[in-house]
Length: 245
Image (cartoon, rainbow, N blue to C red; front, side, top):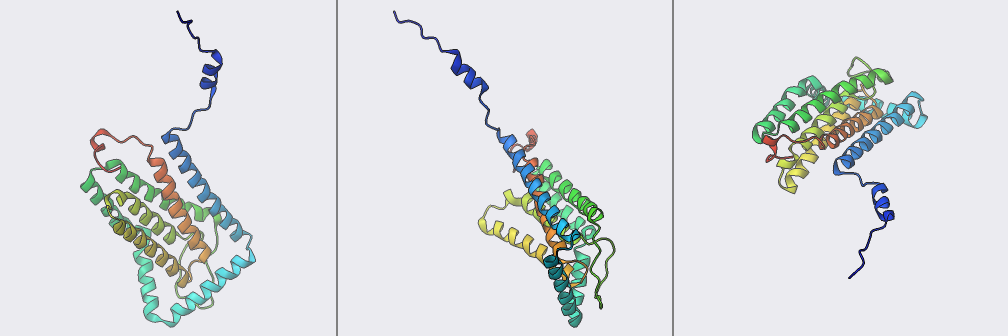
């Protein structure tokens, strides 16, 4: 008769005491936190350079605003187009069409949580971008011959931040519905063109420095991506289990 083999306690103790690998939810939350931290670090770095008036950045900002405004002043048709773009891409004017797209997505897919994620993220980004202005309190550019004026502080650009946040959130929202690479590439390109055009508009009108719009874009894109990575760990209700995730 064979002797019964007894497993030594050492192996069980090692297994019990070994660190567990992070679950999928924990990994997603970690990625969300890292994305948020990276975005915050980048914004703080730019804000510190702005507050300390780092000469290379200051010279680049001043030169870009002066030359951009001069080009706009010399071309009345271009100036009118820039002012119209400024009005159209004001956050309050974008909310209705953006909300309509979100509701159309909900109507088509029935995915309530994903729709509410997009809407709440866009509204939160809008509020935070305004709060950041009050924290940094950077004065707007002062030109000898201004072509446009704007109230409030300059850093980060609210137009750039909100356009980046809204377009990024919409691309992420409809991403599962875009079944081909061509559609996905078109969505990304469209979001990028709208965001960059808004950034250029702000500089050429002389109401923001390039560092303002870069910070706005970083904030808008980074905040939405961090928010989405955090959202993905939410449980999906049963009625939506067969819908897009």
